[in-house]
Image 1 (cartoon, one colour):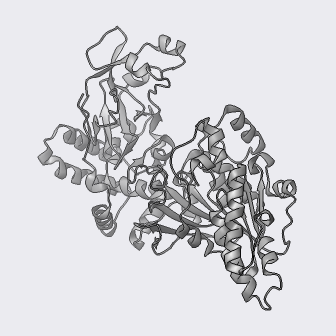
Image 2: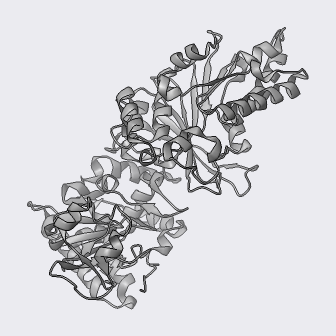
Image 3: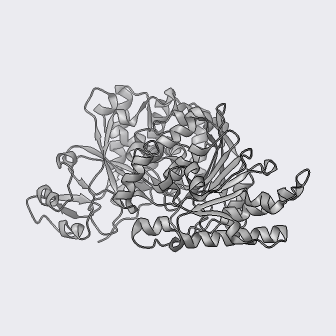
Length: 558
């Protein structure tokens, strides 16, 4: 379904979004394979669009009507009673009815009137529940049949929704999210509300539902109620080639006794040839050990699975948030402000300050692992003036303090220590060492060594893979970073690590590998790695697509 056909998106943005949202048939069929068709399920798509899911389900129901024992005497009625869709856009609803009628006509060799297909023109989120939507459309379902909620809900972010729409959704569904009101979260919430014993839900969703803060309440619910059945990571399957979307498929069904979740990876070069990797069973306790209740795929080897579980639990020691206060940096919210307040030449006012990330499309290339190369940008840090322009700045004293600069997007975690007072654009996070009696607080440069280590890359790449962007880059956010395990440190080991980090900052490139090898030994010792685990991490990093590129930095040249 194109964005022009999706009323959720056209009304949300005030203009048509670019990109395609059509769900490939291969993915639809793979999702429907998990449904028990022998029980004659009712298939419900809450935002059915052009009918990809319902028309594919029609073929399966038609086959089932004929192989029932005895075969159903009215196979068309059998199918029509078990196919239900809701769509906000009338034209899309017409397309869906036609697609379903065409599928049934071909499968049953009868003429089917599209008007008989149960597709209602309603806003499921406005009505608030499946029951209300069925009532509004006067649809009656077979009560004894299990229900399968399937679909690809609109990927509309909160920032694209009108304020009144966001407020209404928050009021109607107070337990769906405590963060940004992304539309797909509400569809998932409504679907979960409708599940009964024996029902199943299968939704295509963006990968950020695995990790983002605004989906935490739903992840908690999935775990606490034993609903999470399976997750397919299709982020590298190129399902939506023309859109910046990294999809997953989430399966849910009521089962209070569930203790594990099936997780699989999907890959594809051609949309008609999805490749499924072997499933892994993840203990739900592993997810529950993260404050964010992040969902992830575990490592393939037993050694690394055990290591990751230990790092998630008490064996990982204190977390980064215990010693580092991570804060957001400077954003320019209005067009033209960056050009007005940022220059590529020397100070122009008494409030001018050295600025990282100041150039247009400069990215974060000024910060490498262990080091900073300032690009020569300056910002006029006029807090009062920018406040009058409705673009407030953080307190400048935040940047004057010694800090750890962390890149928000990169192949691996890139961090460096700054004591020169550089101001940071929002492509970087500002990590302020907390002032209390802890070995790592007294030796803050040691934190750089931990963050840049292969062990932390291994941990982060698995637990927060759901935040990756642009086909491979990892996304480093405050709430994700807070969960990084630090292990156990005393004054001597923290001091030694800080000494090595300083040496790495000053050393020529020819000495980097030797110094980082010593850093790795100390970081691994804090997590109490044995030799088998150390070797397994090295082998995993050698195969990883990102770790070999850890020092590849695109420097901005203005």
